[in-house]
Length: 147
Ligand SMILES: CC(C)(COP(=O)(O)OP(=O)(O)OC[C@H]1O[C@@H](n2cnc3c(N)ncnc32)[C@H](O)[C@@H]1OP(=O)(O)O)[C@@H](O)C(=O)NCCC(=O)NCCS
Image 1 (cartoon, rainbow, N blue to C red):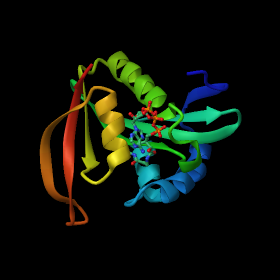
Image 2 (image 1 turned 90 degrees about the vertical axis):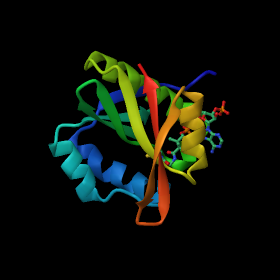
Image 3 (image 1 turned 135 degrees about the vertical axis):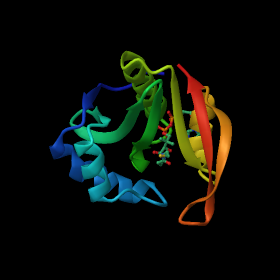
């Protein structure tokens, strides 16, 4: 697939408004601006994807020992299904390996078909479930991928 010019950069504080705005359109249970702030201040590994000068996606990882926990990966709705999600995920694999992680883990809402398809496509497999994890209503599927 031929992709237009893009950049993958560490998230800066000045990116938080744009990321939080995309978050509100893209998720059923979106992070708040405060959640982004907290994650940023906690020092999680946070990345943005820019196409030209426009922020079109972001991903955040929490490193804990051998595991890299994928906290959030989002592509702006108008930029989806063009390979950006896979490209960003691949970058996060590289970042996680660089931090010494041997596995990436994540939780995904069981009804989130697009995310489940992306993760399966990228090699993740289900390792468990958390019942009623999302607002006491919807299960989370726990997935892992050996790095
Ligand atoms: C999940 C998400 C990041 C995927 O990003 P994307 O850029 O659209 O994904 P890609 O174009 O890289 O897709 C890669 C592969 O994943 C699968 N896939 C992605 N979206 C899909 C969809 N809506 N339906 C079916 N398969 C899908 C396909 O196998 C696809 O390969 P293909 O296009 O060659 O068939 C995007 O849909 C998103 O941001 N969703 C909202 C936020 C979210 O739910 N994030 C994850 C939980 S934190």
